[in-house]
Image (tube, rainbow, N blue to C red; front, side, top):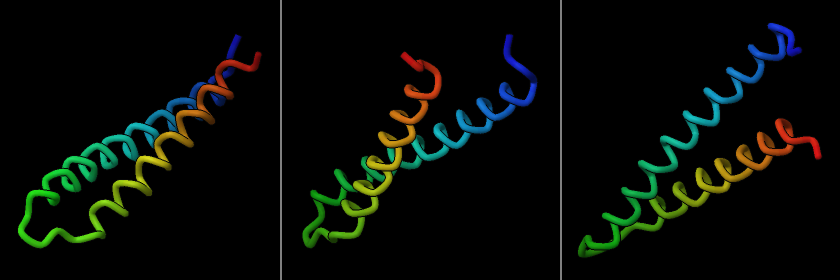
Length: 69
């Protein structure tokens, strides 16, 4: 049986994961739309890359934390 403290930590982690994932999605859309500009910038793609890497890292940590096999 899980303790209330571990449930709270799981909820906080899920909230952080959702926050980072949401902004990674927005940054990815912005980077794709930026490709169609006359002079595309590099920073939207770099921001999307950093946020997608952070999202994947958090997802892998969450999988390892919830599935200790």
